[in-house]
Length: 320
Image 1 (tube, rainbow, N blue to C red):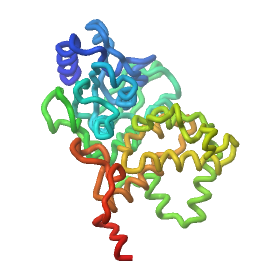
Image 2 (image 1 turned 30 degrees about the vertical axis):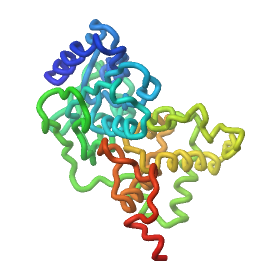
Image 3 (image 1 turned 45 degrees about the vertical axis):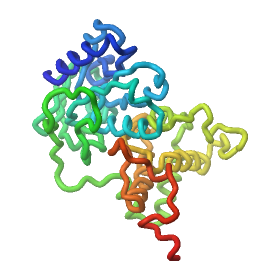
């Protein structure tokens, strides 16, 4: 794979000046990529690149801000890096970004189900299909079913910020999807208030309060002082009720208003497959309407809720 070899060459040259490079490595099988922390040239042999590289590796950056770190990013991951830089949570002088053109990542649980939980020896992505080879035979799914939902509407397949880019720009192949795929947010907006409340009540009844969504989020950096577990002030109880679970998710979403890059890690990490990303998407839509701002797209911009204006152009509160 030319992209992979190009990335390996760039990382090998930069590695002597870095403490660690965060990339992806092979997991238990071809479908199970895992984060790989490269500290020596031999580690590059374990590096992989492909549709199984689902993790947003930017999640690790705040914990390594005082180290010289390299990171490999897809387009959506690069938006998280930009947002971390905007908020001063990462030092640009300590960061080396290796980017590439992404053709989409897969929905791993869905493909595991399609493979009937058998180990996957190999996976190929192209010509409108994702093809798996298992010990019981081949399995193929259309891209529209196999890829992560975020990939079907992706607008940034290439890294928006990087020091080394693998291969020529403009080479990412978009998934061929008929029509406009309807996400959870669109379905919720078509419901009346009561139906929407019942939807969230049912979804939150399945929540385990494991906080995997919080742990996977690259922008949720106050986990040691999270309001969900604070006793002073005591905002949320530990009661196992849909109301308290939804309260936590609402707080989480509001803390990410104008910051969430919709990388989908919260939803991917949820063991109960709860569509929590829709809450962040709803707030992002309002932020865009009011402030004409999309998180993680401009390294020089300031997130709208990080500064104060007496009058906002699209709010005009003085005219009320």
